Image (cartoon, rainbow, N blue to C red; front, side, top):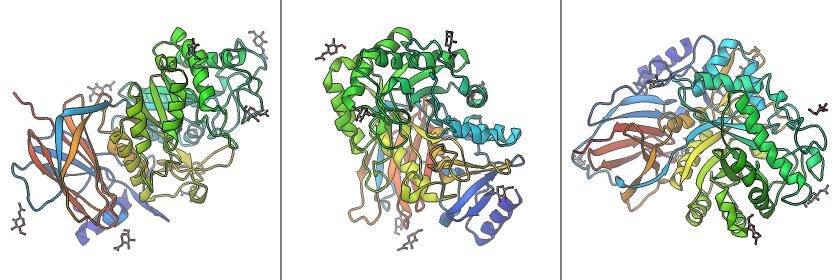
Length: 528
Ligand SMILES: *[C@@H]1O[C@H](CO)[C@@H](O)[C@H](O)[C@H]1NC(C)=O
Ligand SMILES: *[C@@H]1O[C@H](CO)[C@@H](O)[C@H](O)[C@H]1NC(C)=O
Ligand SMILES: *[C@@H]1O[C@H](CO)[C@@H](O)[C@H](O)[C@H]1NC(C)=O
Ligand SMILES: *[C@@H]1O[C@H](CO)[C@@H](O)[C@H](O)[C@H]1NC(C)=O
Ligand SMILES: *[C@@H]1O[C@H](CO)[C@@H](O)[C@H](O)[C@H]1NC(C)=O
Ligand SMILES: *[C@@H]1O[C@H](CO)[C@@H](O)[C@H](O)[C@H]1NC(C)=O
Ligand SMILES: *[C@@H]1O[C@H](CO)[C@@H](O)[C@H](O)[C@H]1NC(C)=O
């Protein structure tokens, strides 16, 4: 608290910082940048939206340390103008008559590692951490991914069916999840003000179903046989076991990263094998026993998405009646360097019958760039870039990976470490740090409730000579009739000033500092 106040005072004296949040970030500077520190005594909270006067728009901003370290900081409201400012070349126009996908939600994954890390904090701090994501003053997360059994971010390799040749799954048990993971999930549910949609994803099948021992291998036999049927039944058993614990399962993905044979990734299929298993075994199993559970296929990287989905659907189109959605991961899309959202765009054009959903993402996953980089602003803007990019090509939601990790980016049973929006000190158990990625998520999850609808926003006039990377911008109308615009200025050196025209309100001028993210919220005018 003391540090954040003195930091603000210095900035105010320097004339850099004139916004005072009610409960600002307690800034701590690490090697790569600034994080916000949370202890039992203090944790920053986002200023409430409150009532937005007519002809005004609320603005929340996050910026790098070069531009004042705003973290979802509420700026003074913007005023709509009736006249266009001819000095600002770039103009975006909202077109309410053209609408796109409906939002399912935003969230993260309840991995064993996240559950264990959280359990190592003091009880009060555990509560504060979950409130940061799920509480009413937190990020309004409403999606939770649940690994079905162990993932790489677990402390050991286990499945729910460890008794060999138990094809009827009489000995199926989620007992491994009972001590830590399920209480963790239930605490989040208890804090949340809305229905969290949980979806399960398996990493490993039991050894006795596979042609090789864990962690790699494929299912024995062919679709329709006892191995494939038993593995499909495993999904129903998971859904039933979790529901009996009071955790309703909204959906499942057919397999996490099915195409990746390498080291610890889990169960391998070709696209054709996966499609046949879903059509012959998993689809009929779930449609019979759990007809409302959404079935998402793919759940793999975006880079080869089109060709692989085409292989699955074209192999036998009767798979269509079992599939609700396509889940996709951000890895290997090189989308941080050459945005590659085109893959999702063309897949959705070819297969519009499904919803598209980003099911996993994290930073620090590349070997050369492995693990946490505390405070690195670029990792936050990468999240924002990926989310806006996905939303612009039709994604209905976005799911982060581990909700929290320790200072090393683990624990991970294969010593493979990554970054997380929240990093906790498990040695002291009395502090955690919120990385830029946390706030990047919040720019979306906090302001885009489920059932928000994307509304067309067209760039109608643009500077001829442009030395800056174009703005990434997306707009939605929420169920309570608010417009939400989220914009990312990727340019590291130039402020971008653009105008947005709302047909019923007039013109807003947005000023985006270098590498900043803004969320703009206003009430949709009632036209009567
Ligand atoms: C546009 O720029 C001119 C010249 O700098 C200035 O006189 C004018 O007031 C500006 N218009 C607006 C709407 O800001
Ligand atoms: C598996 O379940 C069966 C039937 O419920 C039970 O008789 C058996 O002891 C169990 N086996 C193991 C290894 O738990
Ligand atoms: C959830 O939030 C809404 C709107 O703020 C409020 O009316 C409602 O009472 C809340 N529900 C719970 C369970 O907290
Ligand atoms: C398991 O099956 C896959 C696919 O058919 C094959 O590539 C792999 O070599 C097999 N593994 C073993 C240990 O037989
Ligand atoms: C396509 O799938 C349906 C339903 O599973 C099956 O009856 C049919 O034989 C399949 N067709 C081919 C060509 O495999
Ligand atoms: C974590 O806690 C330990 C033990 O109190 C302390 O020595 C260390 O400096 C802390 N590190 C961070 C980054 O909080
Ligand atoms: C652009 O910004 C980056 C990061 O803020 C800085 O390192 C770099 O020197 C700047 N480049 C120019 C040409 O100003």
